[in-house]
Image 1: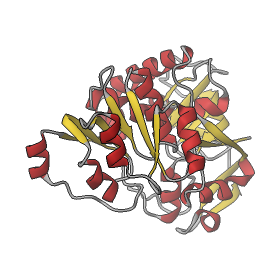
Image 2: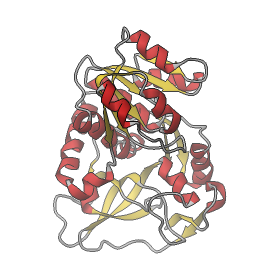
Image 3: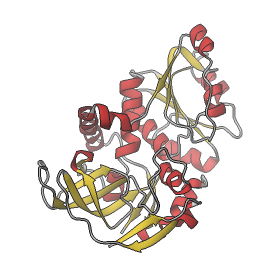
Length: 324
């Protein structure tokens, strides 16, 4: 079977090589899946560059999110059958066949295509935990979503709307404004031509955003503190902007807002039952048509390096998915 390997730490076009590897055999507690679709994520870029928090020894197979068909079931695994269509999140899935822990796999919602289902896990789980468990978002609250045209951002926009919030999205150009609008944002700010701080204040009558969802960090975080509402919550999801911010705790004190960190993978380690519950809720929302991964590009499996490179260069919006 064919698999993409990171053979050197570099930009994706230089780092990735297509190789032939033996087909996996289901080990105890694991499933073997025939890959239908692999959703690309920014960590794939960081894995190529050697900048991800996990640094597997070279060479290794990247990819962390897929939809596939069960073709092998290891000893001790229950609840799955050969032929089941599932989604899973696990490092090493950018291959035609993969082995994943059974605990990382869930039934793929029947309402979603293979490409859409592949993109349901990480972005939507992150959004669900960020907005519901960490920020406790409530109907009629104002939600500000940064990078609202990206994979994580479009998921947060849809989940915010499903929760009854008024959603303001921030994007980097006019093409991405259209993507954020398609995701359901009530108001979209082009940060290159507009000041999102002033737009948020104006749209909320001076109150500010009740919840801010920030996968960017750096200056974006610092400026977000200028438009956070009384008892607002800033959910720190990542640092795609490349700069780690420093929180001014005196500012949080005098304005009565909360800073909430979110590392979704910790839930799989420390509270896996919550991940399963979140998947059930996301499936219900998908089946009701309230959320649907915004797949903007479906790319042949053989074109993975170019697709991952464009993701790293910031030239993509929505979700980019590899299919066989």
